[in-house]
Image (cartoon, rainbow, N blue to C red; front, side, top):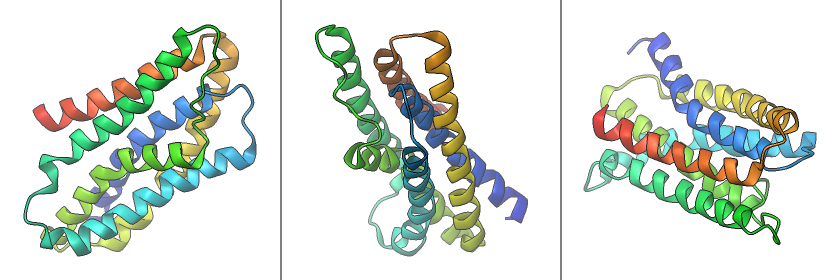
Amino acid sequence: MSSLEIILIGIILALDAFAVSISCGLSKKEVTLKEKLKVSFFFGGFQAIMPIIGYYVGNILPFNIDSLDHWIAFSLLTLIGIHMIKESVDSTKQCKINMFRTKTLLLAAIATSIDALAAGFSIYLLDANIELLIISTGLITFVLSYLGVQLGKRLGHISGIKVDLYSGVILILIGIKIVIEHSFG
């Protein structure tokens, strides 16, 4: 596997985190630099750590992680999304899901990086450059997540949309996309 192919895998792995980071930016009226960096570190960090886990531990699993990874990601993103939608429909409540809360970011980071775990396992099987995958995926995801939060914040300001509702729908759609890609891709 060439270096270019590994970097392209890193970009592809970062796209789900980018999409979820847009939801983070949409979910709050004002986003601080600290919050943008927190999202970026969570998503970038998990995208860098999961291939390591897949590389070193994946070969001892009694089953292929590819058969489950998309369902786990779908479940986590859908649970967060449904909760956001429920809260947005009740006009007496403001959405209690804080996308910048550590617990929520942890769930979202795990959900968006499970495919990186499988990629690490694949890199092990192909005897390819795991270090390049770790560095490229982590850095690319960090940058795209930061930009995603910024983009979400700008979209929320421009459109005046009911951001909790749309953020929840986006999360569910990302989960569905992940299942479709793994089922038909």
